[in-house]
Length: 214
View 1 (cartoon, rainbow, N blue to C red):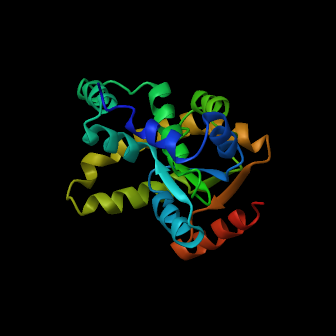
View 2: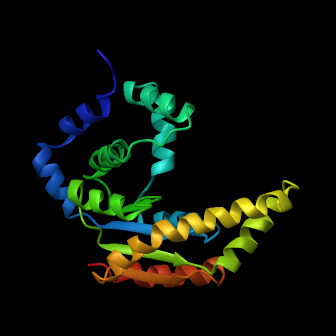
């Protein structure tokens, strides 16, 4: 028998029926953190965890952890990624839900980082898990993000080689993310945070947004 369902078993034994836990999840403080490469999103997530005690879930981290765990699902994911293919959205979403259910009894809130990356993912999350309470849009200009990415790249000595790659990443980010932001902005759930200032200045704005959560 495979060990791919070990976390699911732990979830069931940790606290009641699936429907009860699903309802608890729907009532949780779920915050999407959206921001482009070089926006400083990662730094702000770390600070939010430190001050508010939220559980920070990154889809990239979850995928890497699953692959290294050696579970059935991890082996399937490893095979998919080894072929250079995209992991199916349903798989990523189920992993995210499993991780949230695992923490739902103790979490003060959830920071969802790196998801949704596009509109279809946002819609699927709402159907399978819940509607977020807030969307933190860590927004810096494309010029600022490019400058930060290039400064990071200088340490590797290949900044010139990476410029076009960074431009492509930013273009992809804008095309995929803008519809997501518009969707939640129309629901009054977006707090747009200017990421042009220092990390401290940005975090002050982030705190004001989070403190408004009931």
